[in-house]
Image 1 (cartoon, rainbow, N blue to C red):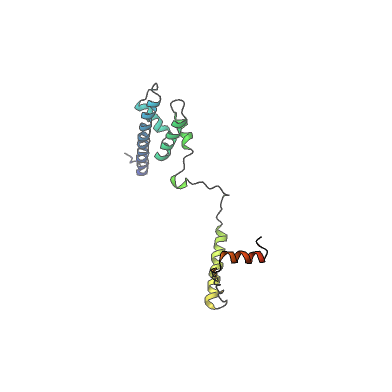
Image 2: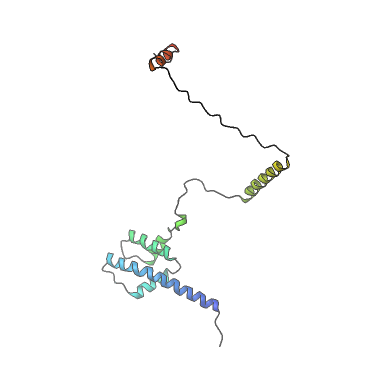
Length: 163
């Protein structure tokens, strides 16, 4: 009597759990679809067939696919409809769109930048270079006008800025 590989058992158990999760999601959607398409009969065997056909999808992706397939369905959604709709699923962390160019991370350039920064800090601590003097931003003075408006207008006329 040969003992089974425990990893195979674990694998089969996780497959069963995945199938059960798919069946739970699909059972909810089959209820909705049977209300939308009352002439189409629904059975537990049919749910099991769909679950087996779509068991490679995560519950979130399957839920998304069912919702999207329902939005565009002209007939009772088939596994292929759900799968095509599920392809558009993006995890919540990846829901944002970037409209600019694709960004690439260059590890070599980053390492060079860090090395230059470390060399600069070492040179500062050894006194090889002097720190750059920080420039202060001069504060602008606010001048309060104390002359009456008519005098100001007269001065502007003399200078040719007002007629």
